[in-house]
Image: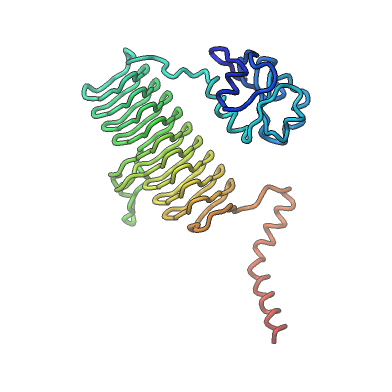
Length: 344
């Protein structure tokens, strides 16, 4: 359930979305909620047919829905072709997170003398801004965050509490970095001499484009030589690992626990489901969707949906299938011999 810091009317909501409204346009709206939980001063939305059953009994002031469901709506409706997108836009109106928690620099923050700060920058308690850092206008640095030397952060970007940017990281405009993420840590680079490992200094950096969001406790490693590059409008969920010199194209999205090995290139408008693993030095073309828990070990050159592994099943059935799997090679050879014998 969400609540606005100031009251809006149903007319304000409709105007924000550029659509018409039925019912009392001056109805005060104080928040958003689900169809089942919405109160008479809240707007609900229907974006998934699975929740159509809750529409008939909703108590919402109005419902955001597709025109095809309008006739089933018992309360005022806001018809829009993409209700989920409409909900996303409205959610910004009711976000309780203030744009700038503290205007200016908290007394406990440590800011290098040569750091360049834009207008209306907020640096919260115990944050550290190292030498040579450049912060754009309206940047928010959350409590306990560290911005490493010579890093650059574009205007309107927000670091939540306890974010770590290592040295030489570049972040674009309007980014959101959730707590605990580490941008620009050393890539996993070691050379083996037969007896032990020798660390390879990671000499590159990390570049994030505009409108990038990085989830909590995710890691984006700096490049070994060139930079690790994340394109514009890329959305990265929590606990994602992106290795050195990976390139991710604009508008792609990575769900939780994705792991991408070094020097792999992911195209634009790609979607990687939760737990997907990409091997190193691969190329994934634009428009690829990989379903959850899949392992990709070869490059993908055609857009589409890709999967690996099998879905969960009863253990007894899985054990039988596992035995059959071991027999597949022998079965294939026997089948080939039979086919050859039949042809002869």
